[in-house]
Amino acid sequence: MADYCTLEEIKRELNISGGETDDILQSLIGQVKELIDKFCDRSFDSVVATKYFDGATSPLYIPDLITLTSLKLDTDGDGVYEATLATSDYILYPLNSTPKEYIKLNPNGDYCSFAFGILNGVSIAGTWGYAATVPGPIRRASMIQVQRWYKRKETAFADVVGVPELGEVHYYKGLDPDIQLIVQAYRRVRLF
Image 1 (tube, one colour):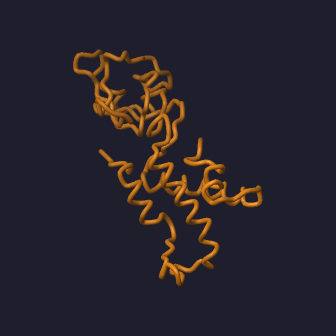
Image 2: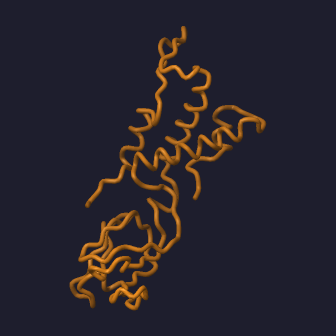
Image 3: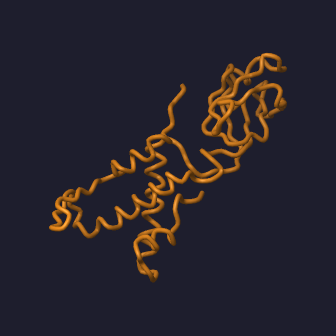
């Protein structure tokens, strides 16, 4: 899985040349990615994979789905996915945007449930994640947070530092409040 910003971008913005800080910065980049994912309850990179869900009635709630390649059902619980749904058998929601968050059976389709009562009864192959590319505000928030954490070493880990030219400067532990404002719009709203 890809990070939300690159080492080169961070070094350019911090005006760092040479490789003596590469390990520290790369570690911070990964930690910021994890923190943003946790705060937003989603991942902003994409992965092609097959995921399995317990059987359900309609709708079937799924995490962020960008594209659906195949949807199969294990109708008898034997671990074999014998039913492959046609695109006319289901409807992905929301209709006019991605990522898709749930699937409803088409009332005019051939199926009345998503293998209801069968553990791991649904197999969905596709591209998972928020979008095919990392949204610009998430990239920018990631870069800002990495830089702030890196610069924090100069504060001796204090929460407030006095600088004659600037007055008081506050340093925050965890995700900075400014970054929270940026990424808040991307936070997952649970439907279930």
